[in-house]
Length: 398
Image (cartoon, rainbow, N blue to C red; front, side, top):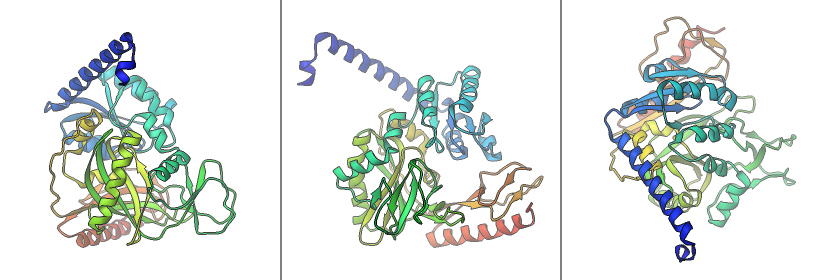
């Protein structure tokens, strides 16, 4: 009916645009079908995970991030370390890769929450494989996001966007944040305009990793995650995640029903994750991360290539099995340390800083991973690795 109401010129223009988009999409799919897929730009605050998975998928990753860790460099065809993802710092690095390698596609990861202008810049000069800047912005518009949850009858812990009168166990959350940074308990102090209040909810933290093509979705897996208290108002920092989840089948189905409503509403594409909390009786949605998340590396399913395919509208329901459990954990500095020359990193360590790098108290030093047949043995192995690393770092304090 809508097409019939359009004038003839409009139909022709619309059809031409559709055909061009289809040609471009098929061309992109042909590129990623090749065993050697060519250069692709990877940008994130820490890009090791995406560079590693891109390399494993046959791409030649060109990397921009804030750390240039040793293993990131080893996976990258070329790399550029910048101090922030703000546009004025990002643009020269992007321009260099476009000019030098004629790269045309980019995959972005974490770190753009406070730099949406950088995503719009990337969209102006490259083909973004993942969610568009508009989708990214919409999901970080907290008043509109929670209003949408109300319309969809999806539960979430109570939120408030002006200073609450009644006293409850409130948390203060930044409007745009990642990894739990900036979340703290509300003690009645003044709060800036870039924050909001959310009631503290007791329960187990979970996430679900999924692929989407704007309308449909495919669940990759449910995960359990945990936080750590680093003090100084950083009580809820992301600490680790494991691809094991004791949530009931009914609970998982309930979360999938949320996704079936949210994916088409927000036009979600590629790899995304949804964080939620469950107290054994009810689940509450916390947030959606519209980008590949840390849980991506817990699954052996060529998720980098499938992220690209889903972004281009091809959601392939390829079966993937999970043999055992895999866990990932961030190791934070308990005191100021300096990475010594020729430091021998134990097996299982990732995101390895270069010699001479100073890690201040509370900053991440590296991360660790473990794979075992049972989830509890993974958690035990991660704890042992953490203790051993912290003992080694103790002698390298500043």
